[in-house]
Image (cartoon, rainbow, N blue to C red):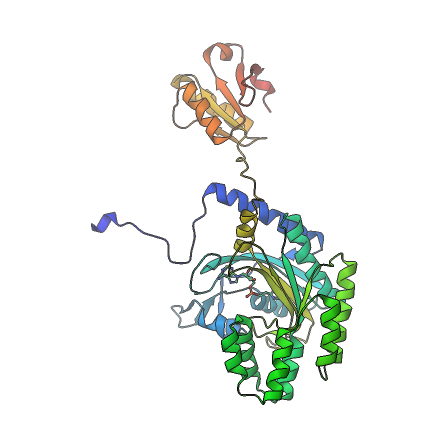
Length: 421
Ligand code: HAM
């Protein structure tokens, strides 16, 4: 390889997006944003990197192990954001605590996790998420879940599965067993990964009664009616958590969400969750099928703010794209360019540029930069999906006119330049 002719490849786990792909992604992004905004959430933007301490507080082993962490030139420890809940809570505590509640914000941003890259798992990926801040009522949790479901429905995603649980139940049991918070977090991380043998191993330190009890809870999963009844029978000292779950589910029904499962084994991969948690899985994605994760959490006090009820979720945007693709739900779609202006001779190029500038006041318009002959220019418009070609020719110009060709019908008509809008 010669010095000045090096070929570079993308860093592992990152992707380039070509125009056709970006077009599809923007469309999907737009529908998600629309849905978030219809529920009254407003967008916030936070920095791509934050202090390492902020990111590692209550984040969990998996996140910490996968951090892109670096020191800047002033020796500050920083990290690329692996998610946005912690940054948004920092922003809330710093700037938004005095606002009337609830404060409802959303974000759409790239995140970074140094993970084993595979289909649906990237080192740079995108999250679209919301945080609902300030209401401890079950309707706030229900709304957040309903919003996630509504967005997926609006995207036309089919056959996704919603699992809802309550992390307080598992944590409550561990607390009663005097398991330290750090140990609880480690255990929740293992449960979240879902490897049966690892879970069995981790549970070995408990008495066989506690072990059985924990296993029963972790495996408690199914349609709400049955599971809730079973849970009330099994779960000791957690009545208020079961009631919380029931109340939220009742309200969720009013929001129009009826098709979900209860899963008390949801442990989530982040340490800040405290109450109701939920995950959504899509079809056709293999192992990386979790397209959404969220729930009730506590971070404001950790960041020096007042105690505030918070819940939210984040979509894995890239996985949603994969799921829609697997379902063939993404239309190819044309680009935005409506007009291509081409001159029949190089002598008329300046005129063509002037005309394109006029058309561009109201439409997306390209002027031919390749000095193509007319036939080639028409072929270019055809393959590029540009619906109209404006032909600037000698004869028509004499009458202050141009020809407009409708690429679909092949019809051409003369139009006065002054009438071009
Ligand atoms: P999370 O479950 O860690 O939660 O991430 C949310 C979603 O991001 C996942 O369900 C998944 O779809 C996607 N995701 C995570 N890692 C990757 C990756 N390496 N490649 C592609 N997609 C990925 C959170 O981040 C929480 N902040 C969600 C939340 C908001 N909870 C409350 N508010």
